Image (cartoon, rainbow, N blue to C red; front, side, top):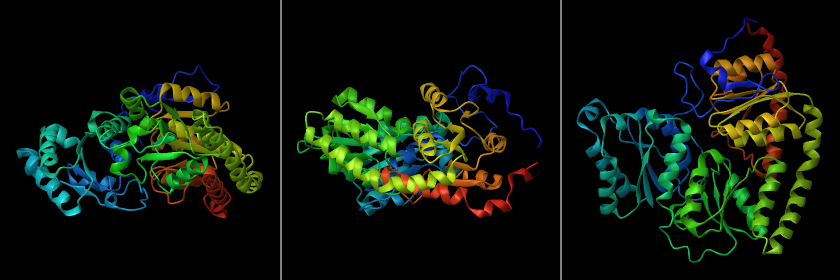
Length: 450
């Protein structure tokens, strides 16, 4: 096999455990020319806010930005599906020269009149930041005329990384919080932050908490509703699932409303159970909550464990590669793969912090490659060198896996099967088993790659 060389400027964002002192660089802008797998600022904000189902989401920019993110996070809704529609001001050359403010006003008012949303989010893309439209002034005018919240999302793509898009989304969302009446919120109530209900996970998690005796005021933002977000300041605890996207919001709510937060993961048996127990322990003044939690966890584990053991026997010794958006998700995936007998040979993220990568180093065996903000060539190189049998990622990683002739598991926005909770862990294990053991890979041997 011909050697694949890594760009010199990328070397400090790639580390092989056990080979050298660990000094991982992160939070950097993507290197020009590296064709990064990472999304832009606008995309980061869009995937966070998109699942709020009763709001209008208007992209102020060229049509390509709206097309790029249309239905990008296939969040399920139990009611309205206004979020499934993609709206754009469709800025063109004339608008770039003369400004797009009037077009924004006309488009936004027409959408509100047509769909009667509970709120509107307006996303500024790259070109808006360049031509200098006064988006805030337009939105103040529309909000006064239409009497609904109209929120600017400052997400010009050139401003930073996908993580900056998360921050922009959190700051827009924060403007809604506290605008509603929270007097009816009970003593044992939480918000779930960073759960996006891609395959119905929010419904599964809410049902667990309901069985424990815990009320969920708002899920931000899976199957989200504007009214629920507006009264979310009445909750006693914020439970942050996707730490990269929503920790900023949790910190702002803690500072203004005094609501503490905990970080959890709903993926895998171990982390799912810990997430439930952590909430039960927070409400330790009510012993019934902990007792109900113990009973429920026991029943749920007993229901899935026998099949997981059977799958583990078939997958023992197989090798997995992971590349996901947030490093916190990678933690849970490593544990889940180990539970079903697989070794992790490659793990990376788009938005990991120094602290996250230090944790990853401690979780991984010697020889595991850890990578920040990877590109297709790097991922392909290490999949080949480490002889991975499975790649876990999203839509941009799928072609890499299939070109390398290995199994793929979608753990990103596009999937339709829930992977959270106990039943989600079983779904995940089954998917891994079916793809890794498929006979099709004998017709695409990896040693053909030159």
